[in-house]
Image (cartoon, rainbow, N blue to C red; front, top):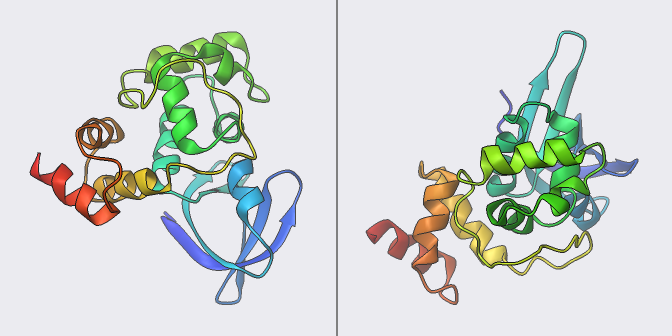
Length: 194
């Protein structure tokens, strides 16, 4: 299994396709639209990857944060949601916004993804609402493909806790009790104390 790749962005194609050069080997991967738009040709980037092997094809999906990958893995665990639909849902907004929409039970937000109907969106909410942690804020979620990532530090703290073995739900719950204005290292240290 390929867990992550670090390399130079060689090509961008389609709506969300990348070729990343890792020491002379080009890996083609599909990424959510916010990650695609944040990439510039020639820059070095790290992506957490999900490697799907099927009878007639192998596909690689990339995510800029570990949290985004974990949400994607939860999405594709839902019956009727495959990797392409999972990437479509992750393309609606930044990973924290998608997680928050699912935690809030925002069916209309999930249903806006290409190839995801109302019934599939309802199934996503029913299956995952209790698995993604508590909402970071309440109310409807807007689709913000070009929005700035206001929760970068939150993502890094969540990523660190998940790398230490916390589930997404556990990491979210523990970080809720920690001051969001503290540096990432301090937030993780305080979260581990709790």
